[in-house]
Image (cartoon, rainbow, N blue to C red):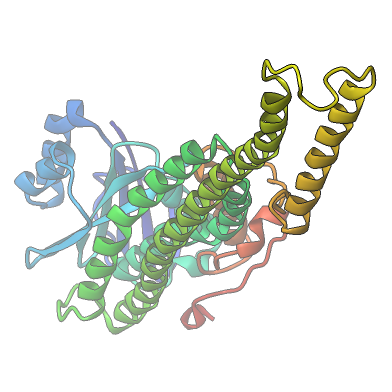
Length: 374
């Protein structure tokens, strides 16, 4: 079990302190814990020292919960889901909010927590407000990482459409991977939006007016992410329909080519069958140039039939766009990009990053999202 703690006094961040360090006369503490099921007993002892409900702390480690908000009066349990560092997979981030303490618990390394932790140490203005506003900032970082992946999806879907229009044999494998990634995001985005909606309307004394405003901003971001997931699922369904249409078109083209060949060979077979009959009085049968005349006649029929089919457009090749290079399986590449962007933005902004649709091309745009810090 890994534990670290920060102490904030008068809106400024002091040096890191021991987790069991007493609260200052004015200010608050942020305790971050990385613990797994094997650390449940040590975690329960620490929870008792911090005045948290032991059963609630045990449940955060033993059970997997969707994003939610539980109000225990003296403290609140806020369960968030954040994106892993290098893959499309969400992990549970449990946050215990009290009047002067914020405790975050997660089983694996949390890029969102690390970014905010380092940002608070380097930029004192990020420590403004109480633990509720810090929790809102943390929720903002986690939610915006999800939005970044959805922003990259548009470029990813364009590539899939190119593959679909050519009925690429590997298309189904590619789109299945993307759909699985979107399903993983959807399981987190919609419940998280509901949890943030509860926080922005909460009447608990643990959340200040400033905290509610921040949670309201994060709710807007989560709503955008939820709409993006639903839109992406619809876009994938349309792309799959395009693939099925292209596949049916290819099957039709194959059938058409076979039909043309059969139509050309039919009169030739008739001519060959006629002159192949065993009758002695057949015309040209005794002529030394008869076979040349019949062969020329058959060639004339073949070219005439082919010309008719070409004029009707039956042998025209379909115009398909060449497929572009695919970035990789699913949306994994998109997951890696936002993790770096969030850290970069925190070095120059007082608030978490703004989603950057141009991340695929390497363009980096930043914009502060919280005017209350200025």
